[in-house]
Image (tube, rainbow, N blue to C red):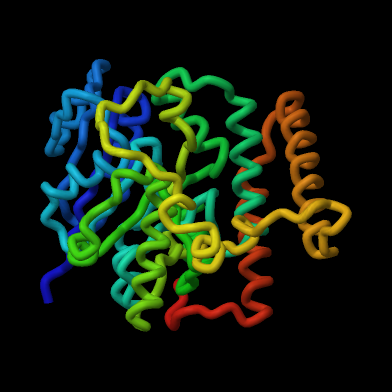
Length: 345
């Protein structure tokens, strides 16, 4: 059987340091062959030349297209059986691509994402990892250059290969419904059948999740987009915003997710019902809602305290992160969390 290939589509506008690290991690940790399609929205800092030197196919838009339109333009040039739509401010985990294709073929998934700090297997793991990054990012301040980005990754995870190995060992075979918009892998045939991304909806990951979820419900076959617990990709988060937004040059209409789908449909189909639930008035709120709100408030307080400590004495060591992941994996195993056979050691 022919080995599947994986095309990558990334849109860029400047951010040379992030583009350097993107290519560095891709070339170091990619195991499945395939092309890299770069949609360049008028970069002027050497990023275009950087990607060309590394063999990427560069499509110059001559303007600044929105995310879904950029992805559609890149998708037209892909040839891979699987297509990864990815942000340029990510750092790829070791073997992330093999894990993604393995999960999609084994579990018959049309759309899947690696885990990352924005969405992991449980809310508790997500909160812990995201909070750790939030504290480190605030302590580090403005990104200076590519070496500063490398140092941020080391401060967060320690030895990157060891961290990725621990993620694979701890969470192999485990999936959770959801989507992580910074890195989305889609079967090429499915993306064709969907007609690509809807350029009107800028919350493109939400729109794709709802589109596939509705398709599954209508056909009573397949599965919604899933997060693959044993693949991991780090996302620096909001690098485009920090780099300074410029107006889009595409002129199509724009819709919010709820304008397209309706609030009731979003609440029924979204992977995290609590995230889209109506918020009751406090004096009428059920006890469960009040408990969740109190937990979020406490989490923010803990995050502020850790930030203060980090600025005084330095960040907690990466070994604390590994210890936390091992403890969470043990908890999940104790309550019978599903796992595939052949868990790696």
